[in-house]
Length: 352
View 1 (cartoon, rainbow, N blue to C red):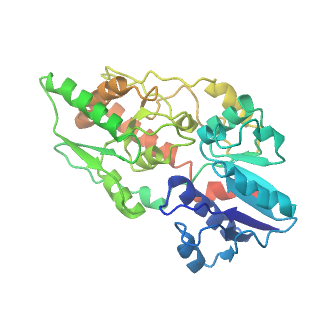
View 2: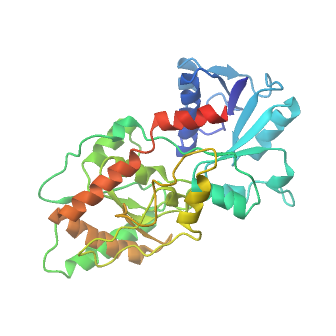
View 3: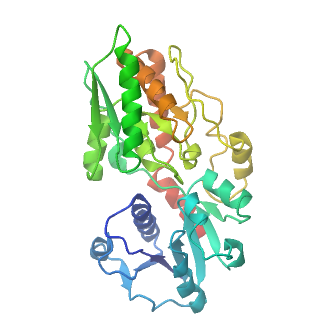
């Protein structure tokens, strides 16, 4: 059985596309027969994948009955190629919002003979409860090992990382609120804002390892990989979950933190995790719970005032380096350590 991935016509690498390539590599490492197909020969990553030894199939040809044809949720028209060939068609859903607006009017996902993979447990909940779909497995991305490195942080000031690719204006508002609040206090540590943009994974990992905090401003999200990459480097995230971030984000309660996170998911985390124990996919039950020390400070998407105030308080605590803060940093690294290539490989072995 071959596993063939649809590669969309993107000129620049996106997080979702990078994850598709990562999953394909992991399957290849498992000894599976993996191929790639796309309508655009210059799609981001295509040339590199060919050099890695991936089979590149001509567009619209080569699919057979018995093959698995894997497509992203944002390109549903690609399902027709697999269905016409009698292949098994799997939709890998990496952002819940695309499930709402990519099908033609009056057509629902449940009317199509498709199978589904979800990038996170919140996305699986959305697909099940909102769209009435059965999710075969939860398949999160894996953190690149480059991000797991010892922090190299300055002793005299606080460095705050941010990625401006999504919601740059909201990041600016969060920064402005934090600076305004700190300016009215008798003790305000020096702050350095660290932009992580258009960097290689290795460069991004080095920058994150030099920071104590990460502004999480992306939404909507199916998973939210950048904040987790920050956690792997010991950064404490402050900001938004994008809904998908509830896969791993848990509220922290620290002494001296005036403005703790206020957001809560629209479903019961504990109930969802317990239900997940019997599902094929990531065995998160018993690992992540609503209670516990938490791993960040999270607010409703777009709540720049709450996030800015929490960031101000977190900056002061990061500068003080209390034992509770160090425990929080450790918990962030432990959270990220659950999302490894080897663990993703175990899930893939059960799907294909």
